[in-house]
Amino acid sequence: MTDLLPLLAEPGQPETLYRALEAETKRLVGHQLFTLLYVDGKDVARVWSSRPAEYPTSGRKTMGETPWGAHVLKGGKPYLGADKQGIRWAFYDHELIESMGLGAVINLPIRYNGETIGTCNMLDAEHAYDEAAVQKVLPLAPLLIPAFLEARRKV
Image 1 (cartoon, helix red, strand yellow):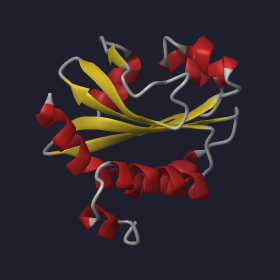
Image 2 (spheres, rainbow, N blue to C red; image 1 turned 90 degrees about the vertical axis):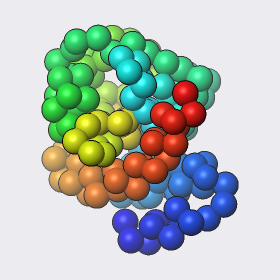
Image 3 (tube, rainbow, N blue to C red; image 1 turned 120 degrees about the horizontal axis):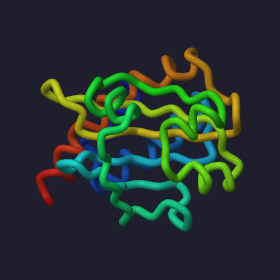
Image 4 (cartoon, rainbow, N blue to C red; image 1 turned 90 degrees about the horizontal axis):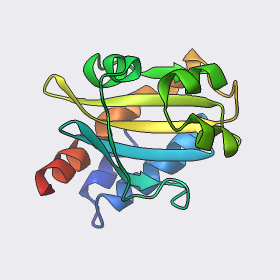
């Protein structure tokens, strides 16, 4: 993580940081889909996607009261969905996810001042992730705080 801290001072934010985080998470745990979403009221808004054809950066979703939302957004805990059952439990768009050959997910809550302000999301083939993978990428989450605060401010 400390190797990425100096990037926050570089021009071209937040894309410079987003690209670096995408590359670093791929190096650490691998992924076929990497997305970043910030919380905007009851919605989440996608600000980065490694596969914009399927998951465009203009995407917004209303996150109603769901068990996933209670765990990640309200509870501030990472979510590991190691298989397709975990994907189906968490996401209403699981059919699209599965059609892309994805069956495992790590969702990292981005927390600031006692609240979740966004999520960092990695998806890969079924059984690609375990708890050790979550622990490898979890320290990267705070790097997104400035970018997500700025995104929320602009709304």
